Length: 399
Ligand SMILES: Cc1cc2nc3c(=O)[nH]c(=O)nc-3n(C[C@H](O)[C@H](O)[C@H](O)COP(=O)(O)OP(=O)(O)OC[C@H]3O[C@@H](n4cnc5c(N)ncnc54)[C@H](O)[C@@H]3O)c2cc1C
Image 1 (tube, helix red, strand yellow):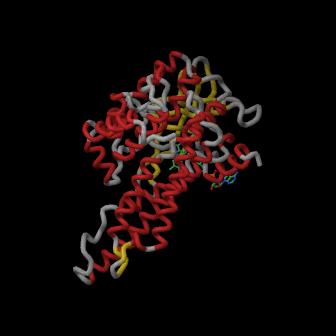
Image 2 (tube, helix red, strand yellow):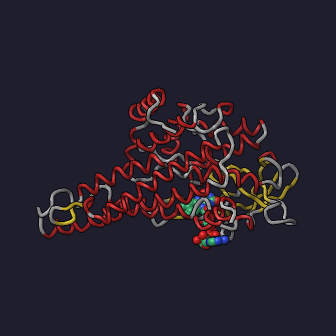
Image 3 (spheres, rainbow, N blue to C red):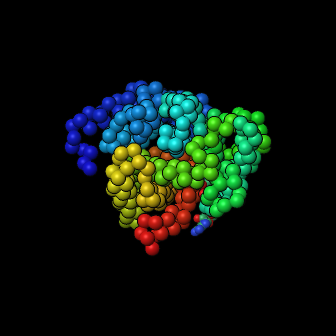
């Protein structure tokens, strides 16, 4: 696929770029650039800016309110979104549960939930993991017991991203204990403000509040909050994970970081007349990272071409997950290398003013460290990379 030579696609790219330059809220871009966390209101503002334009649910089929873009247009849009530094769209609604709802939901469920997701009005959280069920997700114990026209939910979900911003949560819940552990799991939705739901924040090593523990105590939801068939939740959850793992690619953002690193490395002196970019070890690592992004891009295009007609990415999504997250970790390690050298420069400045030019503490250093820690988590969430390698070995390579 050559995205660079088609004039129609270049016109599309120019329109998207102009939107981000002129119409997207500047305060949000500025806060994100500084590496600061957004409030719930700012997350909504950011996503509604896309939603009002019809550019939030970009991969949805047009019959469900997607923009009807080709794969190439979607790809260019994602590149431009990341290039502009737009905050990552909270994927739980638009990338994860949206496709489940339009694929397996009833008409009433589609009408109830899809508009709020694609317009960015309602936030969602993903209630899969539990304190005793992570990689072995099928061993989950969170229960849903049917009583008349309601399910009664009990249990604890953990590592729940963005639950503090969410209006809704989709949960994997055990409705039957009698068969194989994958059977008897159901896909059930709840409002976050239902009586009996409490959220406890988890602050991570990057200093951010992105994660939570969500407790359910006798939470009653109507039976029509069940998606699809009772006991078939495992099948739906796996469908969703294909979308989730493919969404980690974020190639535009990675290319932007590589360009930024080149700029930084060209400005950071390492002693004498040499700069960080002239350091063979750093230059090699930067080239490796750049090649890793090229390889990721080829894989993404190959996987997405196969799902062009509205299907879900297959087990190959696990390859994307591993490539994308290891590339992100390579890149953010290079930021740390640069920040460390900059720290030395700052020290040198303080003992020998004027020895080196410029500000002692680089603007990229603190966000760089926070992002470095944040990207360590990428090889854990969405199913750890060890688990993905097991999937690749067994189901992609047939070993
Ligand atoms: C930042 C972040 C955000 C998250 N967001 C969400 C969210 O929004 N919703 C949600 O439901 N969950 C979320 N998670 C949870 C995430 O999906 C789990 O942490 C992940 O699936 C691993 O489960 P665990 O933490 O219980 O680790 P464990 O399953 O206990 O694994 C511990 C270690 O053992 C290894 N291991 C386990 N089994 C095997 C095996 N069979 N073969 C080889 N190695 C193995 C793992 O790779 C890992 O290194 C998030 C996690 C993080 C870190």
